[in-house]
Amino acid sequence: MKALLERLYNGIIKENPTFVLMLGMCPTLAVTSSALNGLGMGVATMAVLIMSNLLISLLRKVIPNGVRVPVYIIIIASFVTIVEMLMHAYVTPLYNSLGIFIPLIVVNCIILGRAESYASKNNALLSIFDGIGVGLGFTVGLTAIGIVRELLGSGCVFGLRVLPESYEPISIFILAPGAFFVLSILCAVMNKVTKGKKKEAKTKCSGDCANCANAEKEGK
Image (cartoon, rainbow, N blue to C red; front, side, top):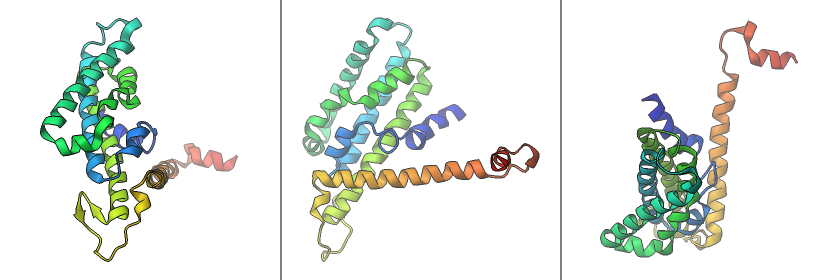
């Protein structure tokens, strides 16, 4: 259970693909003009991550090492096609809004990266939770960016009016430059929070003054 929870924590916080690893920047900057678009792209990517991680993990001892990357791409492309068809059938407005970025999930470096670095080396259950964790991290990142951009750019969140009618929208946040502004601000906040936690953990007193690493550093 600890290993499964670690996979979730790793994907959402420690190695968040959007704010820490800076992966998948193309859809991150392109589709997050609204919170709904960010959420939809994140969920679609997470679905492909989970399914591709599962299948690659199950076949990891069967796939020849020399052709593993082409096989991974075929597996990922198959699941992307399934997700694209389901979105076209059941959430057509979102499908039309995301457009070409749904099939481009195939070349999202997050998915191929997790397949190569984790799913191909670990069992199915851990690979599933790795996909869930990284997928949730990506979804949270895209949705957060979409919320900020939509709120500042139109005064709404998920299409619902949040700010008063008198609010004058800052239209630049709906445009391409707004994506860079919001991403940089949220990355700075994420770095501040995570570095603060690391510093607090390092300086926390253990009560063993004789063997304290911090004391030795201060003495030097």
